[in-house]
Length: 60
Image 1 (tube, rainbow, N blue to C red):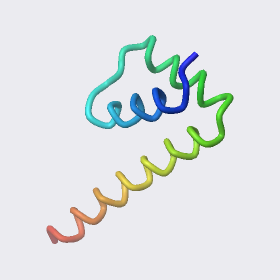
Image 2: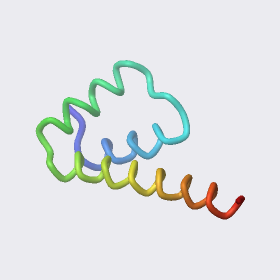
Image 3: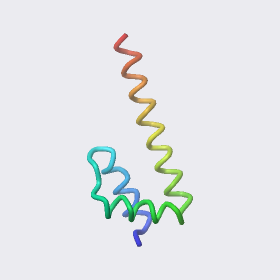
Image 4: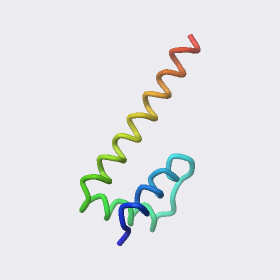
């Protein structure tokens, strides 16, 4: 099982490229047991969505 440092690294890399199935499963398994890593993933997705909305807003 992954530790928190490995999980956050894989979550960050998944923002740039698709992870292989075994890595996605390992991240998900860790997140089932770790509230902090699950929260980090949600926050990262929120920041990415906010950045995309900001870019669309500034282009108009």
